[in-house]
Image 1 (cartoon, protein in one colour):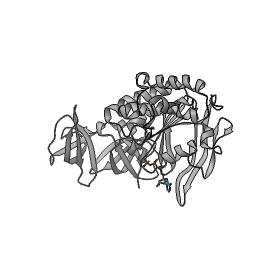
Image 2 (image 1 turned 135 degrees about the vertical axis):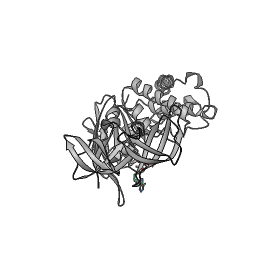
Image 3 (image 1 turned 45 degrees about the vertical axis):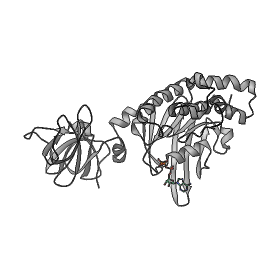
Image 4 (image 1 turned 90 degrees about the horizontal axis):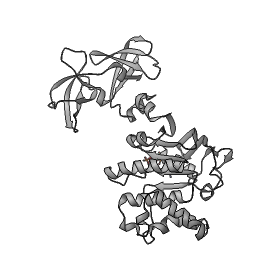
Length: 354
Ligand code: ATP
């Protein structure tokens, strides 16, 4: 049992990491409570892996400290932190059985065979590989190999499990199944899981809280529902699937309700981030922007592309001014056709413009 396993929280206090002139992480401050599943989400190069590697001890921090309760851990070598790690290329030993792979970490830590055996079996049961434990990794499916990597990480009884895009090598169906597995394993362990991904769906479905990073800084931290409905900044909205972004000028304002002049018409929306002037940008999800009758209020565009997605169609149009509009349609509209698109005002989020 790790000395650190009865901890209550992990705190990052002003953690920064520079690579020469690149500030990969800038002053990251965050408290994570025991039992939480945290997703670090952001575009490529935003610092997700750097943050995870600093927590794991694979990279030293440039400034700041990492605390597990009141114990400073960023000064400890990786092996003394005792965290479980699952990475994209889960690097199992091909010549060792599942059981031997799972027990490897314990062996390296000098845990006796007698003590290790029940822990290995427990980890194998947790990931539901009991019937495969005697096999070599090469004889397992991708999802099963992934589960061996997870079992290996949890066998050492880690206070923290760190995962860096662990599902990116799997096909779509397996990814969905493994998401549920990972969530279930997290719940059965009751410790902290920190999960790096650039996939918003994965973050939304797995995490208790999502930390959105950009250029090495935290842009927003919140429950999936909050981030989905109320992204605090335009770049977070962009990342949360608000694909249509139209620049406009504030024409009327009543509390946080605003009317913007956009593309030859007006658009009503809700201010999400305090406006600093007249210039604003409205952000709308494709599902909330739909064709309306030609005499109804809406934004005019010309359809550029339309694609069937099962229940309905996903369309792309462009205004005269060149703004791109992404919308949902019940009907297949022909490219080149004119379309008028409208959205409920509470679905139109308004951010400061340039
Ligand atoms: P991805 O999703 O593509 O893996 P990420 O969000 O995990 O990206 P990081 O790998 O943390 O991003 O990189 C953050 C920044 O630090 C990037 O600008 C990257 O180029 C830089 N960086 C990362 N590792 C190094 C390194 N060893 N040397 C120099 N620069 C680095």
